[in-house]
Image 1 (tube, rainbow, N blue to C red):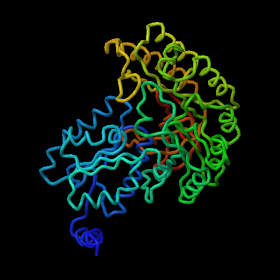
Image 2: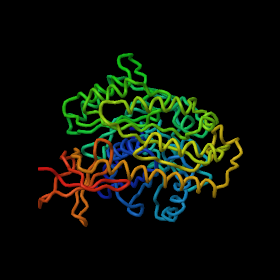
Image 3: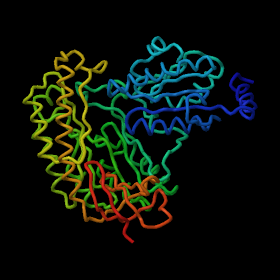
Length: 455
């Protein structure tokens, strides 16, 4: 009998007396959220029970993000806060992008960490857990980031009963000057459209009504079977019986094509929302960022969206204070806000990231100036959103119920344009999560709507 077989038998006996527990905290994007669903499913299958606090867990895991400096630092701060728990025999693991980026350096910075694993190695988690239970102190899972095996794990614990994620493309070939993703997630590799549609069908059969297709550059999808373009795949998912909403994120402007807008117009289940990161409104800064498009080129894509038969909500990402950004460059970003009229902007101050080309550029813009520019941008965008959201007053919109605000007696809903709509029903029994209801908008704020359900 092998060590693994002996351990499996002893684990079953021990589990009956003391179930193994784990705590998992996720940092970063929706890709990380979905990766955590894979990790949770795998650990649950291995006999672990998820708990809600570090103190209650035998194994403490942090699924990390390295896109922003603060997100990365937050992980190490969290590790430092809870390192005292090692005296109680608890084990720590660092997963995800910071794990792939830093590798075994994490053991030097936080020697009480026992497991370091990038997303490409999650399929090997069962084996790594066995090694951990056998007493190994330092286990790494830092496989080749080019593997297609990152797409599918045998077990996925979906955390939302109505909305599910499907990763259709991993990695990035764009190599923007500021971005660490190509170095942590590897090059672009796409799933076959057959496997994507099969998973979407299984989700529909299980009662899911909303599907979100994920990728670092989701619209860079290239079907290795050669059957479907990204737009055709979108339409095919949207036509699966039982699916009422299909979303996708994040798109890259360089691969955004007119047929994506045409698909949104043609298939009602495709949500009328496009997230198209611009990063800067200045062509000079875009060149320094190595985005490989101009302001005018980007605005042409925006014109396709604005010409759609139904109004499509637009959101974006913007970085302020990139090395070399002049006051004039920043003003061009501000004028872009007015020209596009985004419904939301996710804006950040530039921070140097390891291994990226921009790390060699002089970060000459003072942090105080970055903060000032960020605040100016957010203030301008808030006024744009105030006007945009007020245009919905009097409209009746379909929402999916996401939860309840008991203190205010409101139901929390989300529109197909990805806008929060809090509403009242006038009924003693509130609608269940996952329900779809028509709601008339009666009031607006810069980031949300308020309304009343329509009988």
